[in-house]
Image 1 (cartoon, rainbow, N blue to C red):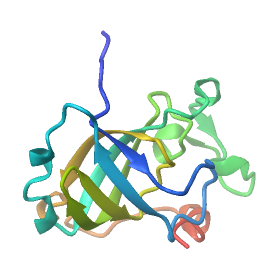
Image 2 (cartoon, rainbow, N blue to C red):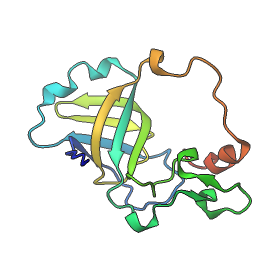
Image 3 (cartoon, rainbow, N blue to C red):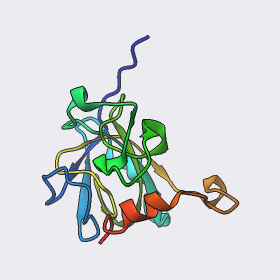
Image 4 (cartoon, one colour):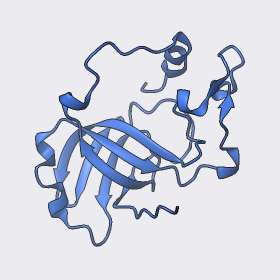
Length: 152
């Protein structure tokens, strides 16, 4: 089965490198692709956060792996790709909850989107409390260590 997706928008920001940390100061503009009407954003500014689904178009597909130490750190356990959020994934899809700053016409600006300049956006969804986990979120200690500088 083939699944064909077309980008509905693209990221514009100052980040061009694919490094894993220090995303906190990046503000991203997301501009709708040609053919997507600005009306697609109507009502979006009533939400504080958006789920941004994007394609890691610059990721090296040959580096996709299924089991390894996160970031190559042997002090952390070897885990499967589905137990981490690495960009070198089998389908190269990223997902981040970003804070909506503003909307103007066919553009929105967001904070805390870990996508580099030019990244194609596959979908945008508003964050609803009812879709967030109802209980406590559980994660291993190594993941806290991995994320300590991510949003700085």
